Image (tube, rainbow, N blue to C red; front, side):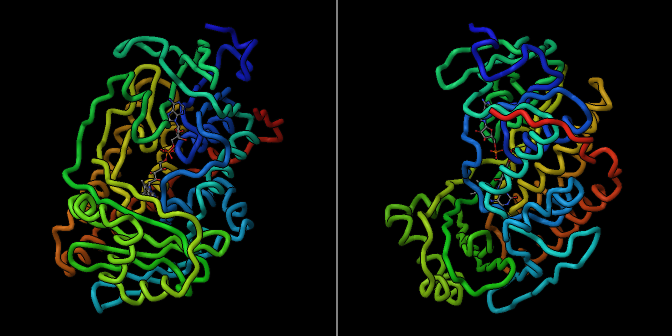
Length: 401
Ligand SMILES: Cc1cc2nc3c(=O)[nH]c(=O)nc-3n(C[C@H](O)[C@H](O)[C@H](O)COP(=O)(O)OP(=O)(O)OC[C@H]3O[C@@H](n4cnc5c(N)ncnc54)[C@H](O)[C@@H]3O)c2cc1C
């Protein structure tokens, strides 16, 4: 073990240590630092790096960025404003205009290189210490006992003990913090979808487009730098059976099967970077709070990306958790989990039904109406949260490493 003197971590005690500096971790850090807490965030990934995600934000996510004063940073990076979303069920198309409400008049799909950087910058500006290239390797305190800090290692694998009143795992779907804590799954889903996505330049489709046929789905999501993310979603069994064809072949075959119109747009556009694949992962709701610890984002609650809602979830739960931390005490943390669970059970359930691919076009349309009601309930809750809590403090010097 080494002391903090030999490490970029400046203190040996913080109010809160957070593992993970992306949408869940950086947001939670920013909100806590804005309330004056001493916060350390560590992440092995490098600052501004990309991650597996098609990065579409729903209204709740955009509303959070607006409420936190960060939407202008996303807009000023020329992230396209998406003013409608179109669902295509076979030959039928349903267009939904994005209504102006609470300062949100468009949806956005910022690349994660942008969104996660904006959140990290905001955490730094609020006074949080964000240290990349470092990870939580263990916790101080055994599962079941109060957690009193974390053991943190840098790239050189030297481990330091850092004390904290609270350790938050925002370290993603394979959360090490959750595993160390033996935080059990309270609920798991039955279905998953596999996906392949890539980027095209010069695609002429405005807004989000989601296309469905029985057994598969494809879509397009305009993002930064003139790129549009084009994805396919399919049952994991078909993905496993057909992947020997190669990702490119499977991707273009499914695009043509589900939407010849989108396939032809793609064929006449320029590719931008490599295709990326996700084989699917089971959704879960995990016990997410205990003495001296909490989980937020995918670490505590993961659902299939088919409903493109994980980032919006993370931004919502970051604030619910930050409020509970500032309120203080184990009961407040338990309340965070209870509020989250109430809000997300419906989302998790309808996502599971959509990712089953066991629907006809009328049924999947019905699932989307249910999804829309669940998202409205989420936005209604966010609208009740007071603005004062999330306001930036007077100027605090940033600490960057
Ligand atoms: C293929 C795919 C497409 C998706 N598309 C969408 C979409 O369109 N819209 C949407 O809203 N959501 C989408 N999602 C989901 C979304 O990406 C996640 O819900 C979101 O990234 C969760 O954020 P997070 O901060 O909880 O975790 P992550 O983004 O996974 O970040 C976790 C961070 O923790 C760090 N970490 C890991 N271990 C440690 C450790 N021991 N110590 C410290 N740090 C650690 C990692 O390096 C990482 O940076 C998609 C997901 C996938 C897989």
